[in-house]
Length: 343
Ligand SMILES: O=P(O)(O)OC[C@H]1O[C@H](O[C@H]2O[C@H](CO)[C@@H](O)[C@H](O)[C@H]2O)[C@H](O)[C@@H](O)[C@@H]1O
Image (cartoon, rainbow, N blue to C red; front, side, top):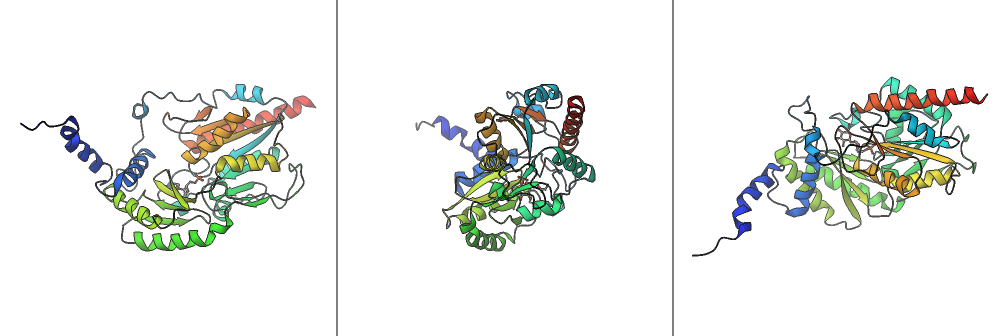
């Protein structure tokens, strides 16, 4: 009698699991891996309006980082005598995650908190969005903006208070990729137009393919279109965000490099007098957390409802907006207090 191997016995169950992963039965392991990562990236949608909160159990075994709010005093005492520099991600950190990326507005209160922070500390937004788009949401001229995952950086035009080099800050890491990104954008628009809910966003030096409003059974089909289009562009790579595939040039540049670039522009490249704080919710923010960890400077703060593997030191729990705003407000109050005590 022919012997059935152990792996063959498991095959139907394995296929069933793959099917459950967004209709992932074709397209190879790359597409299935993307779909699996997308499923894990954000709360599951049960209808067009509601989300199911993820639970701690989903990530059992991973310990949540201590709360940045509960450890506020500790952060302040570590920063004594140093210059705070604030770095903030946009989506999911300063604005809530919503279904339509064009409507991810920041609240008036958050804008106020951000404006206050930027009055006292150099402050940068580091986002996957294009620089123009993120500026249009935030609309504060006194900030530094690093769009396209840090590949497009511009400092404030109207103020050089913190810029010790006193030069205006402007840097684009991937200009030569612009025509290619535009070409791939058109191809993706064309190839994904028949998939209901699919959205392709042009973020200038990178692209986002949104899965949030696509039926999960069609996720593999959408991911397969991305794979097919990109097979002609080995110069581009794909990373996963919150129900989004992000397409970037394969260059050694990311949010961590942008953080280093900005610290250098501010005159803090090799300084011990600086205390950078980076707050973000996404995989792409991990590069920046890692840089802080390696420099042994400042703190990375992960915004997340659940415990996750992270290079951040602290965390802020959802609702992200409320917690991030509270943290920024605390910082300003504490700073004003220290100024008064110093007088
Ligand atoms: O680096 P970020 O500022 O966090 O940008 C990352 C991506 O954010 C946006 O997508 C995410 O937020 C959308 C609005 O809430 C949501 O609909 C989407 O599902 C999320 O992935 C943005 O639209 C992308 O282009 C960015 O890459």
